[in-house]
Image (cartoon, rainbow, N blue to C red):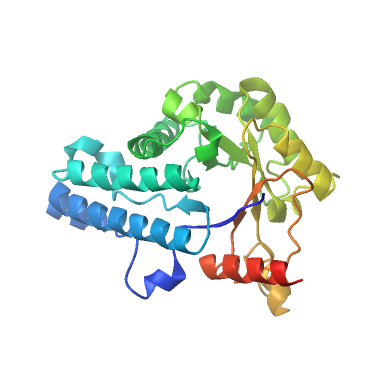
Length: 302
């Protein structure tokens, strides 16, 4: 049965100041150090637990965790934090809730992660960021499978797609099993970038990682495939329940041609089709859990 999820912020709980993304500027980090980092990280993880509990109360069993749980995580090791034990305990509690209630928890590191870059410093930073996501999922004791995915984009072609695909696969070998075994890659929303069939050829067929199908992005990189064809091809790369992303254009919802076509709407109208794949659907709508609840309610009432 298809599950609908959302990413990062819970709009309802934000009104109670429940957050998972407390951070700081670089100057503050350098001035206040790991004591303050730990304080914010612990509050973020408390917020994560509260959101997971809220999701379970509202029968939402799919959630994408914000990547900035631990501020400036690239600058220290987890156990360097003075309250690492308390934070680890909170993460274990979140993981226990997820396992007990079969809630799917995933990550989507930001666009600065460019594993296929031709610049070594960018690759090193990308590897560090991905490894930190693996550390967090391991701390939650969640599966080292794409069920608990770390989803990224290749996100560039550097003037030579074939060489870029080869670099991605080469740099993939630098990742630990905590990341390799969870990594997925997603089609892009720009025609010159990566489509589902290109990702299957360049990545899946070489290193056997799954392809996350983004329905909205497919409109910009269809390569002549229908939605059914692209989704089905992507779903066949998964050995566990596939993930698809779904969003709609704010330009169409608001009938405003001045809005960038790729901008996401607040809610979605659907219908969302999974074409028999039973994929889990990440709703990338601006109103987050409210969009999930509205769509789910509308779908069951029709």
